[in-house]
Amino acid sequence: MSAPDAPSAPEPVDAAALRDLALAVAREGAALVRERRAGVVEVAATKTSDIDVVTEADRACEALLRERIAAARPHDAFLGEESADDEHAVPADGVRWIVDPIDGTVNFLYDLGQYSVCVAAEVTTGGVSEVVAGVVVDVPTGIEYEAVLGGGARRDGVPLAVRGPAPMAERLLCTGFSYDRRIRVLQAEAWVRLLPHVRDLRRRGSAALDLCLVAEGRVDGYVEEGVHLWDHAAAGLVAREAGARTRVLPGVGGLDLLVCGPSHGFDELVAIVEWAGFSAGTAAE
Image: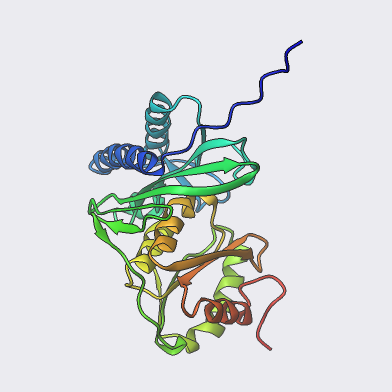
């Protein structure tokens, strides 16, 4: 009797091809969102709280992204912000697409600019997952950020690099605030401690675009509790490929705390974030 056939090895993943698909569908999604913003925009629903809003444009964009990706790669998995999937579940070996149809929905609702469409491709092998391609499209401006694992990051085709070293007192940081009012109080208290030790703070409303600012050297770091995988999968890769590091820590309010900054001085940034009390079990004395 002949031996059973050995399982075939998975086909190698072409990260550049995944990036190209991500860019194509993100552009189409951004065009849809831009068209919807030209009309009347209303809240369709709320999620975790009355300030965590969803618009019909969020839903329509995610449906479009899912449809286009499925048509091109029907066997891949999909995780979207408006989907019910578990973002922390380890997917089966293969490719999973992680999308945020509108990162910065409140900005979109108020027509303030600073909102984006984010598409990332994550590859899982043997239970280990890694984002290998990421695209962030700034919808109002059309600026495109993209990266391939090991291939660098670009803005509209131009290579990106983080800002050079700076003392903590000269670092400009970005942040965002949780939709949970209880956690907002804890975040504000931590910022009261940290703010005197840095140059200043900016709160712009799109985590993805803030991470891209780190990538292009326009700010020195980003700190926020309450982020989800779809918020930072694509933009986090852009930042890392430009010379930044990212770390997810347990936040003081019980949610994920994302810290991002240039590799040089990153440990110092994490240390002062923990000292200020952003992370669980840490606070200034």
